[in-house]
Image (cartoon, rainbow, N blue to C red):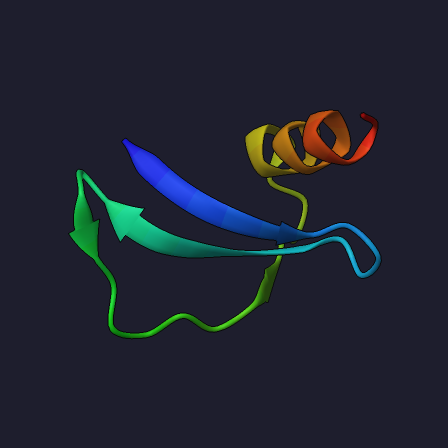
Length: 47
């Protein structure tokens, strides 16, 4: 399971934990055409 933060104003995301393990590198990333990431951002930001 991935936990992520989403910056709706810039359409960026960053993973903050994978399978409950916090990540050291937390750089913001663009979806770069990844359908699942795009849909996740759109769904989270449309509320």
